[in-house]
Amino acid sequence: MQTQNEPWATDKVYTKYTIMFIYACITYSIIGFSWGAIMGGVPAFRLFVDTAVHGKLISLAHAHINLLGWVEMAIFGAIYYIIPRLVKRPIYSIRLVKVHFWMHNIGLVGMVILFCVAGAVSGYDASEENNAMVSRLMAGNGVFGSLVLLANIIWGYNIVKTCTGWDKDK
Image (cartoon, rainbow, N blue to C red; front, side):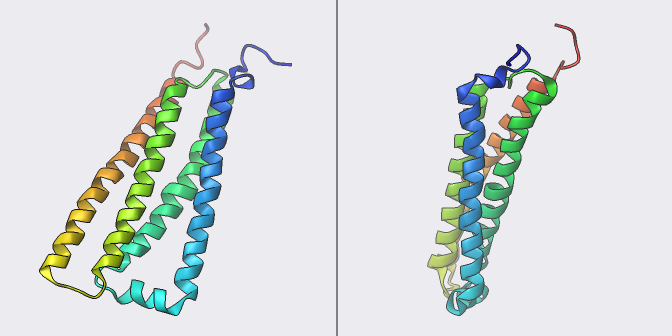
């Protein structure tokens, strides 16, 4: 039986986005785990990552898929699920949940693509021109990273607003 203190019981958008965070977590974990297996199991790829001028950027892409994709998405989904039940009130803003989801994913995918492109196209060329190109790509990476940061700030704001005043009588 649903009570007024269970607004999540009928809010399909809230449920949809909470589950989307979990689906994103699953997707990024499969990508990240597969990527790690390939990097470890394919000697030519491992050699390139270890010895190319900017090959370590490919490892950074792998790390970001796992941390910002798999781990953070799992945490976000869990907190979006738990907090409304804990404080017995709906999430402060479903709109912010949506913005958070899309902004975080766009930022993460952009970062990973630019890390990979910068790491791969530089190859073994340590020229000044090549380093300048990598530098420009990494500046773009900073833009996508800022999107992820802003998404996480939005998430924190939404959770704090949801929790604020939970113990006051209505």
